[in-house]
Image (cartoon, rainbow, N blue to C red; front, side, top):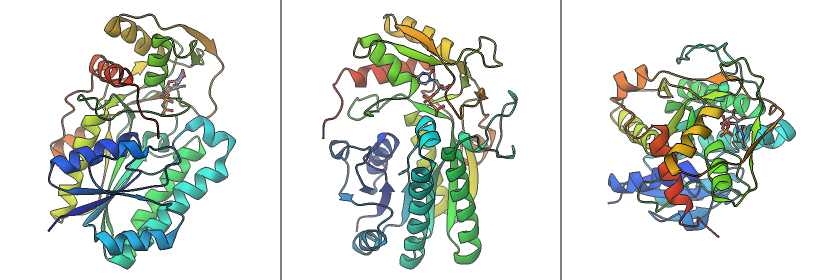
Length: 328
Ligand code: UDP
């Protein structure tokens, strides 16, 4: 019969790409999503259950119906700026929702999870290239709530044998090269899609959040990873768990950082359009630089980033943007 994988947040940006690749790999992705930021029309590769992680009965029902062999847990609130204004919402959804989910997994004897964590758990580290052993000191409620879930997963392994592969994402960008799905937030806050809106003229300008950071040009440095590469790592993580290889933590970065100003220059060069821009204040909770090597993921999982150049990420995001995105 069908081998189901439960994908929380499957209607969102990264989760929808996971569904596409799971389906290609022969799994049936079952999306569980409250549609607070996701889109029903992004769910094209398997069934969709509309529900909230805070609703334990809804979770129990989905496990009973589909008997998934594993969970990919993407559903979360993920905006650093918003987390600063409403930390309670971040803690409730990200920690409370994840706690319900792992308890439902244990009850259903589904003991494999691939979890979306974040480089925001590291906080500011004085420009060093991070690895998985770098001490985690989050600067905002987003990073802190994700770090707390990592702790929950460690405890649930000890007490209940729940095995997890934790991926700490750096900055995810780009879209499905077929432009069947892509990144679509309303309102958009992430650098590359905001830049594309400014280049397309659907927003007046991009505001650069701070130019007085201790970096070579004063703007923040991030390590951008193509969403297709990121999902490739998830499929490898799933196989790792199903092969019984135990819990593990991996950073997903490329080892190369780009400043906000460099990303904008690259956009102008790759799509041949100007990006109207201005400078604003720093965004609360932003680290100056977040860059990671990928040695552990490449050695253990055989993961090699294939599309994670700024050119390809911007070109794929631009191609997707021109399709007009989602509505409902
Ligand atoms: N950024 C910016 N203007 C924007 C959006 C983002 O200057 O309109 C900066 C942001 O301050 C950060 C970087 O771009 O330094 C990446 O931000 P994004 O929100 O894309 O991802 P995050 O690093 O928060 O996960």
